[in-house]
Length: 246
Image (cartoon, rainbow, N blue to C red):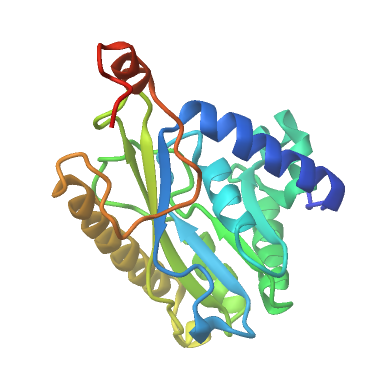
């Protein structure tokens, strides 16, 4: 497996590039609701579990994590992709190779070691990118193994819902759910996986409803993670007679 090789200097530079250019260029709005560092998780390693529905998921999670005070965050990434974009190792990414059981176990033990040391780790337990509206949510058992090896870990479920609504650029929202503090070591892997599947799947449905019930307008509960940029339709509105007034 490929371990993370964090570089503070590179992280500082890339975070600004990601925020000020990549995300701002491609998104109209990015917001978050809930707490990524809940008080109940203080002093524990935190495992963030997030649904995986787009290429942008890792960069959105990285941006959200960078807004938090304190320690570095780590991100599990498919080995083939990490070899292609090896610089992500400097940002805290490490690999998993699902095609090799031995390598996959090594990655999960590495994950558990980070969590036991009180670190924060992001995983995508579906194991692959699935369409946003694909149901039911189906999780692999990798997170279950990591949790059984690091039973003091707090799990924070994070759902991402995104789409093209009322602007030419997409809008993305993240919802951080209540932390899960369960006796992971006393639960078998299948039970842990089904518990996580139920929580993350239910949260995603609730998240989806919150956005759609506002008919494409972003609910006020989602705090901006990125300053809004004008989309094409807003620039065109400014060109209309009187468009720049009020």
